[in-house]
Length: 516
Image 1 (cartoon, rainbow, N blue to C red):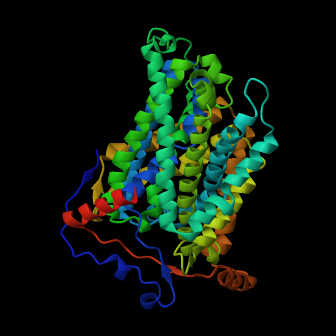
Image 2 (tube, helix red, strand yellow; image 1 turned 90 degrees about the vertical axis):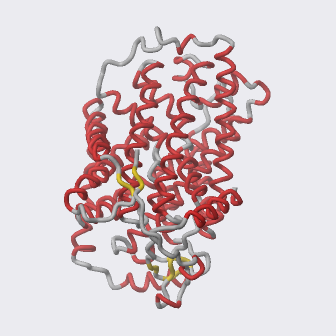
Image 3 (cartoon, rainbow, N blue to C red; image 1 turned 90 degrees about the horizontal axis):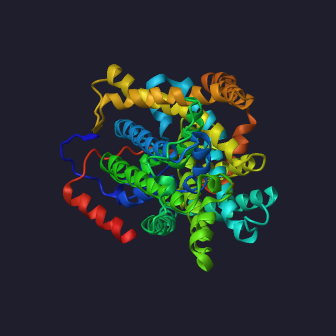
């Protein structure tokens, strides 16, 4: 467990005084601290519970080849996510900047590694995350019009619906106009997805009570388990995709009220909750469907609903669409902050580092991420996106987890409001090495080579554009044009207060409940 250290009490600056837009910073705009503890938990839970639990069970089962081992993988994925998030909690309270891995890698390994992370994340992994969620949204949105026993929905229809999910008219629009609106949307859709999962879990356990335990009997559930150790790497990819989002609060640390307290609390509450829900949901699936039925299903939750809910089966696809929409909202919310922070450090074009002068949101970064998400959605499918997303992501997850150990040795004097056992850092780093190598050994396709070339290819751009600081002359005109078009301004960073009194924490929790 993480240890939260006590600190001296300081007088907190009022948020109204801290969030002045222009006076103290000469025309610059700063993001406001307005994401509460409840909002933070909603971002974690709402982003993690998105498309994965409604799509990944098939991929996990396909690789493990048994019900028992698939449940073990789901449990282990929850533990790995919790360990990784606790490592991030130490880093996030020690280096309280938005952008998740970027500032941690920058301060630990230097600018080149941080640039490679931002290069891969902004152009590949984070937009693909939104695209994967959008594809699942599309699959469930069109499923009622294409009954699974009759025909499969055309690929073109799925991708068109996926584009509708991520275009600025919907998610990006909400994120661009208001941080509070985006977090409120997240809370509402988190509630919707929990309703869907509660329906599935309760229905499944009713079936268990009626004696449908054939596939969950410990004597038979592990029969036929895959003996290929490296095949479990892909199973972890599919399962960990469902848990993706465990690091989302670290992307928005600069907008989180009292991050020293609410960042670790959000993690400690959110991720174990998701792990329990995922395990119960998978048990419910196997109480209704056989492994063979699951492997042939294009939308597991729809198959489940058709088997159990009769004329009310439409409820599940509806709530799944709400779930995936909310997850896409949370993913875009966090990803936009990464592009914003990286732009502020000079690693991308300057316009991405700017904030809207009225809405106080990183509008250019959000729109840029939405466009890339649509571009990645069109040529790819679900499994391809998940595998390449996971391969690229776990390279940097491992490096970031190892940063806990590196910084303990290099800078033992740095303040650590949250301090985790060092063994967690080592375990996550070792697991990440396995997750990067195992899928390549099991299925050495060229896609992994292309992903590796893309990652290292970022150095070609780093040397002239960042290290040497070269900028084409016309970029000044481009920046001014979009700055005027979008009404955005350069931004500044406001460090958080180091402590809040118990009374202030209580008031903030009351505010969270009112938001709900």
